[in-house]
Amino acid sequence: MSMTAIPAVSVIVPVYDCRDTLEECLDSLLAQTLEDIEIIVVNDGSPDTEQEIIDQYVEHFPDKIVSFVKENGGLPHARNYGVERSRGRYIGYVDSDDFVEPDMFEKLFEAAESLNCDIAIGKYIHYGLDGRTSVNGKLPQPEGTVFPGYEFLLSQRSMVVWNKLYQRELVERFPQPITWFEDVAWTPVVMTHADRVCFVDEAFYHYVRRE
Image (cartoon, rainbow, N blue to C red; front, top):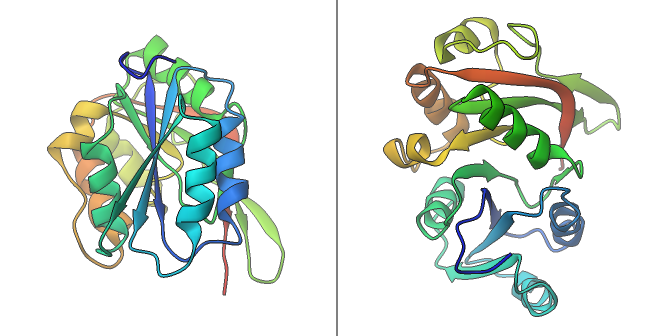
């Protein structure tokens, strides 16, 4: 991908105190079947040596990974910082202690484009502290159905941001609040203003709970 071209998707990866998981996260993003993608890595003032790892990835994959370093401001601030410096028509979020399936962004992008959606949503796999896994993210409507965002709010308890792909304009209108429980504060607002939402009935995101 040319760094002057507008990519289809920008994935924002905030980084803080995740040296043991960062490589798995970045490897899963570099393995994406969607080629027209940029990976925005934001080092949120991590006191550890994650930047050494990030620099190595940038050196080897300069056409895919863009790195930024900022003072620590918390997860929502790091996400906003990355969005402001991204170029993609759609925005996705991946936390640096998680990883994703290789076809996640291709399938969400294809769904959003073919159905002209503001937000495309997939399921996710939850890894508990006890090692058990479960698939989360039920469909309020059959796959391929387009529905308003408020129907999602009526049918879901999960307000996470990272199993979704968003139209850029929607994200820019509602920057994430700088607060605890940022997903819970942000997702309902965005969903309320999303006219067209669709689901892909597959689990793409691996959410790993850690101590």
